[in-house]
Length: 156
Image (cartoon, rainbow, N blue to C red; front, side):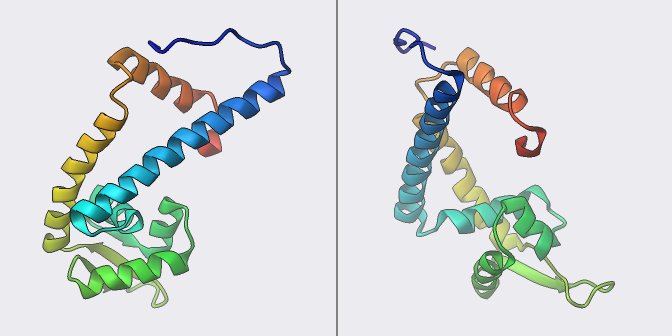
C-alpha cells in the first residue's frame, strides 16, 4: 500500500491481531458513519432501509422475512419494522407464503426498485471516493486477503 508503514513491532501475535481488528473496526465504523450521514442528507434515508432494499434488489423475486433477517444478520423484529414502513411507502410488497401461513414473502415494487437504483449508483460513487486512497492492486489484495484469511463462517 502506498502509505508509509511503521516498522513492525516485536509483540505477541495476539497483540498484533488485536491491533489489526481495531484498525479494521475503526475503518469500517468511519466509512459506515459517513455513508449514514450522506444517505440521510442526500436521500432522507437510513442505512438499515438502504440495506433492506439492497438485499431485496439482489433477489428480484423476493425472499421470506426470516431469510432477509438472516441475510442482514439482524433480528426479525428489526427487519419487520423497516419492511412495514417500506410497504407503507410503496417500496416493498408483502405476499403470503402458501405453504406456511406464518411466513411472509417480500420483494421490491417497481417504485422501490427505481428508488433504490437511484441511491445505489450514488452510494457506489461515495464508497469509491471514501476508498480512493487504495489503488486497484491494493484493493484486489485486500479483498483476497479478507475473503480467504478468516473463518469460513465469516466469508461473504
